[in-house]
Length: 299
Image 1: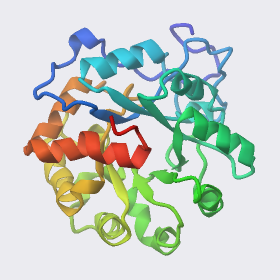
Image 2 (image 1 turned 45 degrees about the horizontal axis):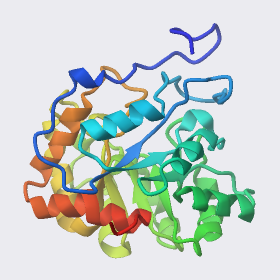
Image 3 (image 1 turned 90 degrees about the vertical axis):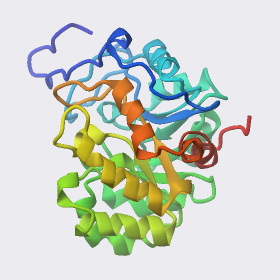
Image 4 (image 1 turned 180 degrees about the vertical axis):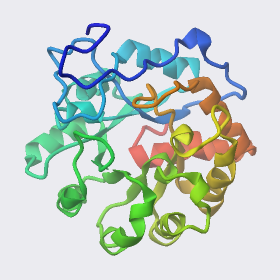
């Protein structure tokens, strides 16, 4: 990929910081710790073309760089989420998953008309859920969620939602009826300034407490106004952890696409010690919970 996009393409977003510039771990991750939210972007943009309707153009964030990021943060396991710029072309993510069957799992993006054989192939590669994305171009929207949920209900998969939780109150009647678990990205992806009593947060709490939904403790920089310690996210994250410590998972959101200024992955990782000071709670968030949700081997 060239250093700047050709005329007519969506502009590049910032690349992630080099590992040498990232904060070192402030706490020791337990064995089999998992980063449940990251993306890979192939270096060869001709072999893996991006969709025209994308919202941004990422720099390459290929397999080797991703694995190096995991190692630098003490993460032995990882979950790759199909990045929106590839639309429903999951090929690169699936290829990476197949090379690391015990270490990696994936969340795919598919059209409702996908065949059963294709879903089985994705399962064998390590996919354990499908993503609904209404925030960035290239995603699959709410109109497909019931159809897709029923397609995967017998596979042990879940539905993952990239959405603004302020949309939740009007969607609750539909979401409560889904036949599979739900996972909400980035702690609801709504500004924490809205407050814990806001309708959006209360709707999220309802899904977590009364319907067994999960939340990714990720993307603090997407919901904060306090760069780059994101101290305003602390009460939000702690409230989520307190309501369901057995259904919280952590993710880096590397390579941190479509944001400015660029964030420090190491600092994001170290936030968890502040949100969950108890090492037993961190053990659940980093190891036990993702092991159940993503069907990792027990050891």
